[in-house]
Length: 127
Image (cartoon, rainbow, N blue to C red):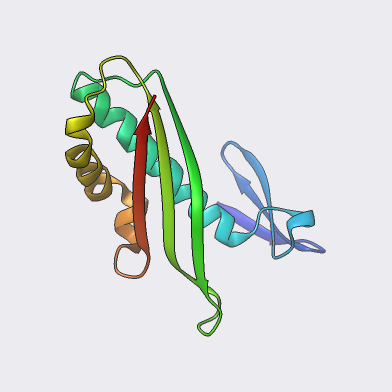
């Protein structure tokens, strides 16, 4: 990865393509959005794999970031993220989901990277 300064932030050259990062929404992705996105999507990918291994495949998973709490007194750092998962799949057994989400939290590298500093809270529903 390589990042270069632009007029409004930085541009990253990544294997999949370029990404614009800026402190302002109108000029690119904000750093906190990328951090929260990484945590959400990593969790979703791990969730998908665990459900498949448990023979409860999801036909669709949606992830809504319900809340991001930031502390203005400490450089606006992220302290809490609430992710809400909407799961679809005929074989998903709701009784097993608390254990599934424990496994998600312990196996998602992004959650594990921030576990000492950001509280990541998951809720879910099955449709």
